[in-house]
Image (cartoon, rainbow, N blue to C red):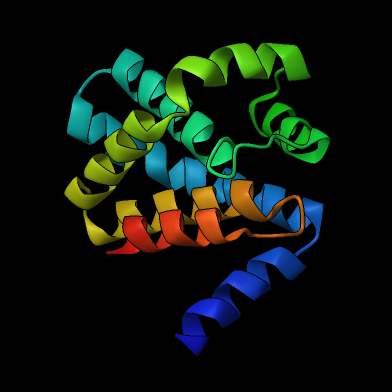
Amino acid sequence: MSTFNEMLQKYVNRSYDELLQIANLSMKDLVPALNKKFNDNDVTAKFLTILTCACLDTDSEISNLEISFLNDLLGSNYTREGMYDIIKGLGDEKGREIVDQIADSLDADGKASLISLCLCFLSVDETITRKEIAYISKLIE
């Protein structure tokens, strides 16, 4: 368990720019794996939206840093209110379960990219809560 906790702490200790770089690399690797699975770019995009919402709402709080991170990663311009509107319908327990099911269906590299992307979202605010730890643990299983 200490290795798991050490891994989480390494993500938390990374700078914003390092996390953004890791997230970009993870997305670059994850998108082809999802396209292969779904065989539909629209479904891949919808799943990535669910993934993002599930991660951002795991601890039921969205920080300004998390919103900035999402905007920097996607080249978007979401506001706090805009993010809440999106997350309301997709960041719930059902959304997290969908992400877990898809993670379990990916090959090892695809699953690792998905988990890495989630870790970037969860640690960008420089903390990982118990709820977030539980969610990452579930994704890894």
